Image (tube, rainbow, N blue to C red; front, side, top):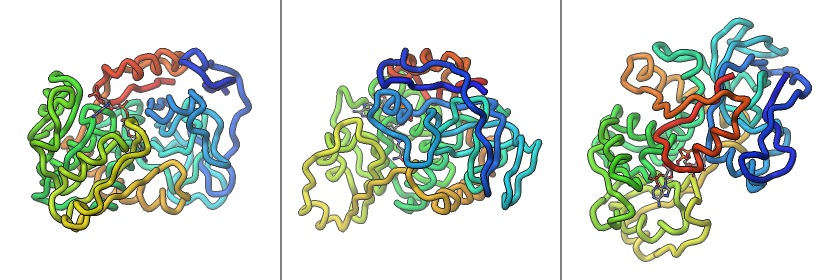
Length: 318
Ligand SMILES: NC(=O)c1ccc[n+]([C@@H]2O[C@H](COP(=O)([O-])OP(=O)(O)OC[C@H]3O[C@@H](n4cnc5c(N)ncnc54)[C@H](OP(=O)(O)O)[C@@H]3O)[C@@H](O)[C@H]2O)c1
């Protein structure tokens, strides 16, 4: 098969489409003929040599894919050759084939075509696990989503609105804020012009900035608030005002998805299929797709994500 290989960490040109050995499905694994994958920030960091795949994961980038089951290894439950699926991966999505534990495989929701389905696994699993399983966002509460126009943000806005929450976002341009309002957000702050903590008070904050935003995030939390940090685009260290945290009886969580064991990923995937897919089936939630790029030209897709101009996801079509 062909896959995108990173021979040496570097810029987008480090990504090249090469012939590599086919993966074989092991016990409990499904082999997928990949129709599409999608670009995540983590792939950019992997390409730069700043985010190595966890032990045992494919060396090729790609944390999600859609496609058709080609083969099911021993002990696979619920999937057979010919099934149209999408999957949460630990790596290897930028390829013509990938092997993945069956627990991380999902049916393609209704109303979404096979290629579009590649835009959903990583964002749906990240938002469901952090906002709903960890922070337990409730109906009527306010969610603040930093980077509302990101891949993660565009799904977080739609899902929290569908579950009856109020949603505020931050973004770096008024155009991006306008797109978030179209997706259902109630309020947006252009972080280049305003300090969000002076206007927003939230019960749950989904944060992709990390260190730089820690003091303002704690200021923006309501009593009983939950801050979930999933990205460190603004550094890994910041000052935490414990006095403010205690007074608000608030909590700070940090999580990653990629390195979790298969059974934890499986529990998240089941939660997504049960709670998120019916909303996609009904057309209440739609994947937001900025561009479709041929997988062999993944370098172009990485250049695009690094401009920061995109809204939603960039697909890599096989
Ligand atoms: N921990 C996990 O399990 C997990 C899983 C998936 C993703 N993530 C993280 O989630 C983040 C988003 O991932 P993605 O793939 O959706 O990336 P993406 O689409 O490239 O989005 C990155 C976003 O960051 C925004 N941004 C940059 N500086 C900002 C600031 N100071 N305040 C608010 N927004 C800012 C950019 O928008 P502007 O133009 O508006 O600045 C852009 O929309 C990444 O940091 C990624 O590593 C974590």
